[in-house]
Image 1: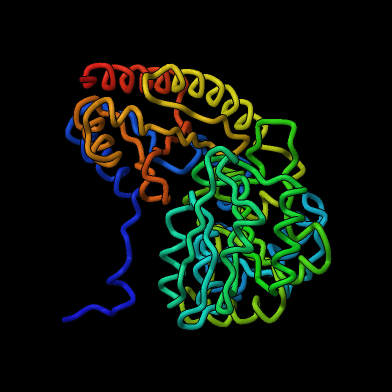
Image 2 (image 1 turned 90 degrees about the horizontal axis):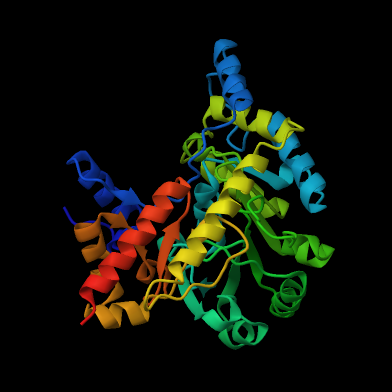
Amino acid sequence: MELANRVKTLTPSSTLAITAKAKQLKNEGHDVIALGAGEPDFNTPQFIIDAANEAAQNGFTKYTPSGGIPQLKEAIAKKLDRDNDLSYSTDEIIVTTGAKHALYTLFQVLLNRGDEVIVPAPYWVSYPEQVKLAEGKPVVVKAEESNNFKITPEQLEASITDTTKAVIINSPSNPTGMMYSMDELEKIGEICLKHNLLIVSDEIYEQLIYTDDQHVSIAGISEQLKEQTVVVNGVSKSYSMTGWRIGYAAGPKDIIKAMTNLASHSTSNPTSISQYAALAAYSSEKDPGEEMRRTFRERLDTLHELLNEIPGVTCRKPKGAFYLFPNVKEAVRKTGFESTDAWVTALLEEEKVALVPGSGFGFPDNVRLSYAISIDLLKEAAERINRFVVNHQS
């Protein structure tokens, strides 16, 4: 039977593919160092696990409202007010099965065939694919590495057409870890207001910042921008709850209502127990991310220095998330491989180090490394990469 056209153009996730290959090699007994995973290597804080267990024991194991339980939506509203100085009512918030599902549902209710969405590159691998699934057209705008992988207002303006409907802003970014400043977001916001574009603000890494810079939500700059922004976030990264699958979107009521209606016919509701776990996370005055940030900062400093010592590798230092996105173009050239993808494959096969090729993020000269593993393994990985480059140099 022939498959639907909408799935024929999908590109498999490069991050999941490399992770699967690394796990296969590990299962075969190989000493693999996997730097591809996009999740913290910390367990979910105990008080959150306890809240989930208590909810299960108390019988909160049934269907919930499609848009999330009221208590969690209220807690998210308080979080947005506390952390981002944003005021939302509960009918402007939807709880989703992870932030990825929030994005998917948003594009489904927003886009008609041919509508364009501006996707800055490097981009998270699922952005263009989700736009295509909604029959929209991803318009990739390549940021310059010299501008820390951030698009300029001039690039944004030049990319807008009569069919442009939205632009995606991801700060801090996956895969680069770079952040937009208040000034940069103000200028981007002015252009979006001028052209009446919806801003999709993916803020999933907002709590994982390792400098004195403050995270800025573009929705918080002005009331006008808030009315044209959908903020997407969740507990996956900041509370190390990737498997719990709880995200949310906050935005204009009509958009949130449409997303809720669609969710009622797709997922029914986010997992009940996970919602109570997220409720505990957002209701607590504890900051479980402090230890995680301290550890990630140490790993970032160490790995960034080691990567820049490898022949043919240059790496800018990010401010957030838990990724490095080094340029390996010269290393690939010196080692005689035809592409970064081939270089990454050979590295995994020979040295058993799993990286994600930058082609999946729209930047084929780079690779993404996650430093969500121990510092000892990061040092060992850098040593193996260096050995691989040196041994292959012609």
